[in-house]
Amino acid sequence: MTVKYQKGFFRLSTLLQVKGSVFRYSLIPALCCGLASILLKLLLREETIAALYQEHLQPNLIQIMSNNIGFQTYSVLVTFLVTFRTGKAYDRFWNGANYIKRMQAEYFVTASNLVAFCRHSGAGSNTKHRFQHTLIRLLSMLHAVSLHQLSVGGDGVNIAKTASPTHTLIDIYGVDVTSVQALRDEECRVELIVQWIQSLTVDGIKTGVCTIPPPILSRIFQNMSNGLTAYYSAYRVTEVSFPFPYVQVTEVFLLFHVIVTPIVIQSFSTGALWSGIFSFLATFVLWSVNFIAAELENPFSQTVNVLDMHLLQSEFNKRLILLLKSHTNKVPSLSEACIMDVELLQECFASYSFKDIWHDPFPSSTVFKLGSDDFGETKDYAAAAAGAGGGSAGAVKSPRQGPLPDEFSTRIGNSANAPAPETSGFSNSAHASSPETSGFRSEQMQIRKKYANQPPCCLRVL
Image (cartoon, rainbow, N blue to C red):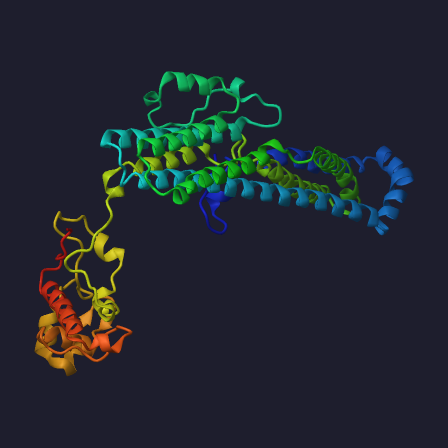
């Protein structure tokens, strides 16, 4: 699963977090290197060892340190190998996550399209519901076996002989036993369920469940094809490992770096402590970055720093069940307070957000609070506009837009039979000045006046 952490700069909980950290791995070689450097510095203080050192090793080390191009070149080479591997590992991790999300999107669009295509089904209600429930269960199974094969699959792995998937399914007991047993014994599980879904679609066409024209219905097969392509792209990340020669050379060079670093560092350090610190840091950084690469190379493996497969399955099941709910297939309709005039839509009363609607639990008959000032006092905009007159209507304030425009306040305060302004929001000027349009605008202003005079929670759900 992906490790959760507190985001931000220099969070103490993040710096000290152990779960998912590579420090516990890189500390071992770094401590060995640092202790070796300290020990070597202390041993050289002994007379016998110091004499041997001054006679045989020191002249060579002085020559090396006076022209340390060799050690610098070697360190740069190791750094390049490690950073290049880490960059490629991050690309593999990011691509794997993208392929998974693309696969989920294609699978869900397949379900959404087929459920929508059943709205005007010519078959009976029971046949239509059985078709939809079968589809939802098959897609849940398809997503689960796709994630399982990404987790345990690879080159030469027999999926049928691996452990059973533990991802949650939508009512697996609702599927016939024969199909479940066939899926258990099959190695190509993803391909088998894809074929089942396509066969279910074809059967739905024959039974009249899907009566959409064939050119539109063909999108279902295209979505399934795109989803399967995304799955194969993700499976490539699991199946094709990072090249072995590159990994081997990088880790061998790191081992040599651990051996050489204490010898070189102690030769120019003034004390044993500083020698150990510099050796520790040089080794700790390189090995930490290398272990990061090893963690990110396969985002579907069963380690810590990987994608949370069980969470992905649970979220996908939630989206599939959404398609079976009654309110999902009910198309929203316009309320009696709907504004049909384009110009009025651009005015203050149309400028609301979900925050204005969802701030409190709804009573059964209300949708949103029409308007209030900054202190929560509800304003009667129509009465205020009528009492103040056109010139002073700007004193009436909308909760989100500031002073109301004079024209808008005057139009609300005046009678509904007043002539409409010349600019009506319609592109056709002849149509805008016609009696039909004037009556339409008068009706719209009557609606706004009606609901502006009502209590804060006023608009009913139809």
